Amino acid sequence: SGNACGAVSRRQFLRTVAAIAPPMLNLGLAGIAVRQLEQFRIRRFNISVPGLPSDLHGLTIVQVSDMHVGRFTSGRVLTRMVESVNNLRADLVLLTGDLINDALADLDRGFKLVRQMQSRFGVYLIEGNHDLIEDPGEFERRATTSGIPFLLDRAATIAIRGAPLQLLGLSWTRVHENRDAAIAESVRSLLKQREQGAFPILLAHHPHAFDAAAAAGLPLTLSGHTHGGQLMLNDTVGFGPALFRYWSGLYVRGESRLIVSNGVGNWFPLRVRAPAELVHLTLLRA
Image (cartoon, rainbow, N blue to C red; front, side, top):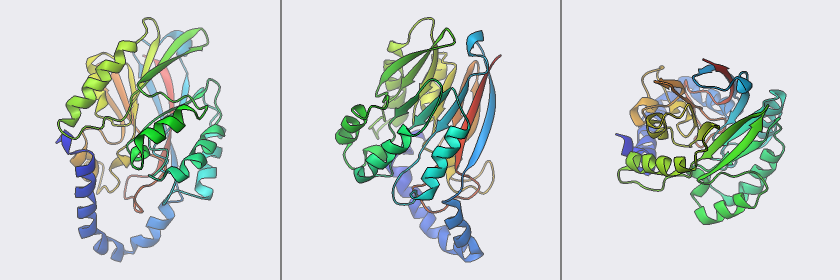
């Protein structure tokens, strides 16, 4: 169920992994697992978006989610991430949460990497649950004063080729009871800042924000958090669909679109059929 997501689901996940990991690792996955911590793909989507202004036709976005700078994501792979982002030469770079794995000691490294990312119209950041593990207030204070545009239940409007585009950044909903209802309420509250005439994009770490976004007719939502399900037997069986309604790739509901990134970093040392990724989006007029 939806409100299983969060602390409970992570505990369930780790318990189940503890049961299945030994036989899996005996199958020779240990070497694969270590290699996967150093690898990520670039996953590309051309998305036809109803109501996209003609000035925004062909707009490119690199979505960087779940970098998890820290224990399992460090060293050379982080430099390669930044190089890959910059080689894509996108119009926008949007970071959808979990910049760090948990330790605020890793935050300056995280900010430094984000400052090295280049795009034509800017780099924007929201928070994820892992960013808040050690000290939520301290993370938010430091992100707010980092010089990187940090959207904490805030919106930013950018003029792109004459068309206003509005980014709406959702905070992490710190509620465990009736979690999905709380997420929906925080989305509705944020959407009060919606600017008439601007093309809106919602940045929300948890993909269940899409329900309220679609209900409000928002054309595009970008999320992460699921790691593509982390351990998947195939496209439809695994932790993704067990814990989330949306866990990887493109989802369409009416005129609304959701992209869920598998994330580019790691909080757990094994991925199976849920490869780490940077997401490259090209928006097209429907």
